Length: 223
Image 1 (spheres, rainbow, N blue to C red):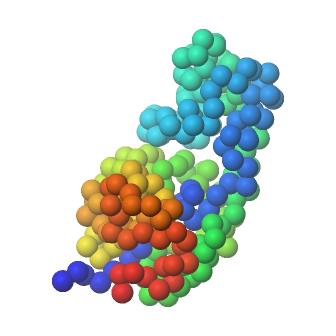
Image 2: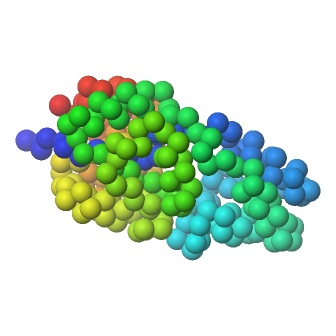
């Protein structure tokens, strides 16, 4: 018999909230502000972001490391990458985020009879600013910044860490996120059930549950 769920963990970016300006928009403005040829794009940055999470002290440092390498790989001076990274930090407003459709309804409904926490791959200052801009920030008992407090997702450590903070059990917990790798694979590696926020396709790895909007969790599928 499947144990009842009393704990729900959430990813943050593109699960609970989304920037008003995309990574691509901010990166384009940053190249322009730095006077540097745009030799890499948003997919290049996002694709290697997690590789720098455990090495960097904060998000500004992460971008400087990442953008220097991306610039160097494309024949530019690493200092050009630093200039773009610094311009990106100046341009990006971490509080300019909006909740995803249905996020507030899901969080409010689940908070009535579940304990809630966040497991996010992101620098603490950056993620704290985003979460503080959302109307339901006080619903979460703990936030684990994977890659900083622990190893990054999909490693099981950040899930185990937040469950320890909550004094909760993995077999009574689910994790909600939009990434099949970081969220679904990571949750399963830690012994949790998963909820994939997706597009209605048949994904691999297969999540325990799948939704297309968060407010589908107002009546959770594990009941």
